[in-house]
Length: 178
Image (cartoon, rainbow, N blue to C red):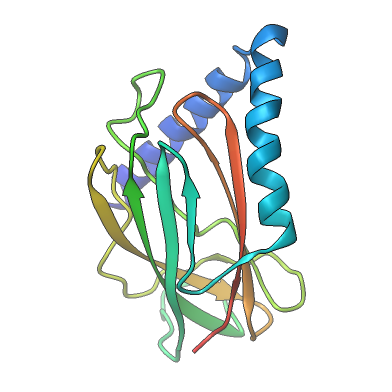
């Protein structure tokens, strides 16, 4: 399962590199117009737990909850001050990979967490049952992430995802720990 996850992540990174190298000046004119309607809204008002970020014709993402756990993995080299299980839901409302590499929408939040002191959080090998999956158009994925942080407290999630047209989409979530 971990190897499959690494393969999917590698393919996603390759797709991002391919998409970022293929834009031309005329296409960037439209990209700017689209991003200007999305990014400023998110900068003014970050999303909170239970609120949904919608990228029209692409996807929706909702952070459902973030719960602290006392469980630690005895085999991990990491010694986090706190470990959180973040439950989230995303729905593919029209995302299709323009390069045909992915079979659906895949959103992982593990590398996007900032802890209460501004330090990047990290994936922690915890006991989660709902892993993110490539999700076809019209389907919903209920996923979990196990996050370790060096500073306990509320966290921030900065999500950056490229849409099916190769346009960068970003949102910020302020997440209160339960």
